[in-house]
Every structure is written in C-alpha cells, then in structure tokens.
Length: 355
Image 1 (cartoon, rainbow, N blue to C red):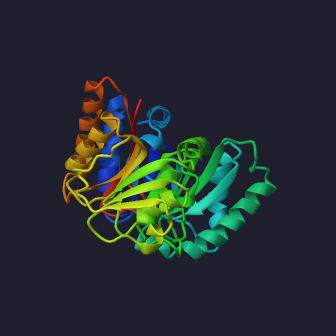
Image 2 (spheres, rainbow, N blue to C red):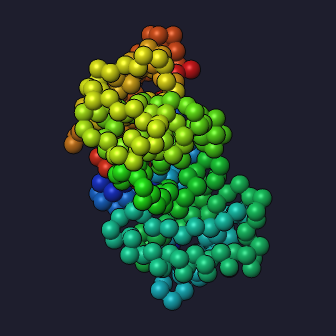
Image 3 (cartoon, one colour):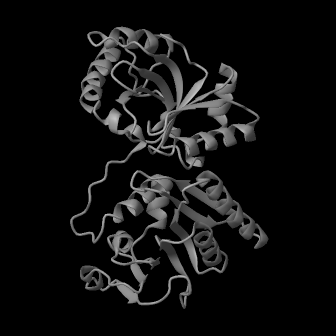
C-alpha cells in the first residue's frame, strides 16, 4: 500500500487527460498551489499530486468541480492501493476507510471511462455491495454525513480510495449521467442538451429558467435534436437552418423553421434562450454568442465549441476570456459554465448569461 494522501483524482474523457491536467495546473497556479500531474493517454483520469496535505486541502477548498471544464469528477485521494488481492479486496479497503475517522453518506466503487476499465463493471457492482454492507456493519454509513466515499478501480489490482463532499461533486458515478435516448427525438445530439441542462444548471435554475411558454432560438437546428429538448418543455422555438427539420417537430405547432444563415439571423424580439450546435471555429461561435447576449437578443445561451486538434485548453481559455472582456466592456459580468460532457466528443458545451 503506498500513501498518496496529497493527491487529487479527476475523471475526464479518454484522450483529454492532457487538457484536464493543464486545467488543474492553471487552477492551482491561481491559488498559489503548485503540483504535477500523472497521466496516461486514454486512461480517462488524471492524478494531480500536490506537495503536502495542506496544499491538497487548500486546492480542494479553492477549486470547485463546477468551475472546471475537462474534469467530470474531482476527488480527494485518501490512499492508493496497488496490490488488491483477488480473494480479499475488502481486507485492504476497509482499513483505509477506517483510517479516515469519518462516516460517509454512501460509497461508490467506479472505474474510469476507458475501454479497459469498462470491463470492470461487474467487479465494481459486486465489490460495491460488499463494501457498503461492511461499512454498515461498522456504522460507517451515516445519512447525515456530507461526504461520499469513492473507490476508483483502475484495474483489478489497483484502486484509488477517495472522498468528496457530495454537495460539490457530480451526483453520478464516474461523473456521467446515464441518459436514455428518447425514441421520438430526431437525433442523438438531443442528449447533449439534456445533459447540459442537468450538469450546468442546478435544480432551482432549471425550474425557473426552463418554463413552459418561453421562447428560444436554435441556430444550426436541423434535424432538430436540440429543438426537441425545448419543445418537450413546451417552449416556442425558432429553428434556423438551411437543412430540413423533423416533421414531427414542425407538426407540434411550437416550431417556426427559417431557412437562413445562423450567423446572420437576429430575432425581431428578444427571446429567453439561444442554443447553438453549429460546426464552426470556436472563436467565431463564442463571438456570435457574445453578440447575442450583449445585444439583448437572449437571456440565456447554451452552445458547443468544436475544439481544434492541438492546444485545446488554450483555445477554450481564449474563447472564455474574449467573451468576458466583451461583457466587461458592455458594463456586464459574464456567467460562464463549461463542461466536456459525456455526450460531447471533440467539443465542450457552455452555458452563458450576463449579470
């Protein structure tokens, strides 16, 4: 057993470990806390090592998952175990759990979102049941606790035992909401917007900002995956795209289809929502969304930024900074929330509004 109690563990999309590590390093630098990352391309996680436990605590207190783009979950490592025996994994896990002198609201055994780790799904389920039962026998499960225990199985012998304050952590194992594709939706892209609403807005915001009777514009709408998410919430939608829209959406009576250029279109009257999944250079899309918000054409926006092959973290930061500066020049503050969603690929999804 090798202690790594000065580390943090972040789950991410496989292939984006470098971007996740860069983001963690940038966040640490802003706090004056310097660490280094251990990464393996395609692993789906980053171990970020800090110099001491006080630095780990300072980073955990100062960096929230909600402010990160490439991390799906951010956990504080208690211990790394490299030699889990196949016949008695609990024999090594339980002493680590006891060493925390903490009770937990629950325990999740999970694996990163990599091809190799997905093969551990059965082991995760069976071991999770055994671990929770053992913790209950020792009164280590407490419904009033603010902490959740996470055990990340990298392979059958290697585990990170971690903890997280569940109020600031993703509420899904692995940080991934498992959504079912609605049979009536015209394309799988609909899951991106559904996940964005779940991930980037809290429950109160969803109830106040996604109400029946609101109006939205969908730029690059065809065939209507994102439009469908607004229509199912009884919103009126102006769908802007030169391509054909799903007939079922058009028959709903809530959709107006305009065959126009999404970059040139502006609504005659302000709308509540702008959603945009157009394939275009990220800086150009960010500039367009900024113009809509600053011009008062919409109150809220959700949009995708298609990332380049290189310097992807730098490109995201540049887009964010440009939108921030444009808002500041207009006397406003930008509320920017971004995440590389499970249903995203070489892209990120952003929620933005002005305050």
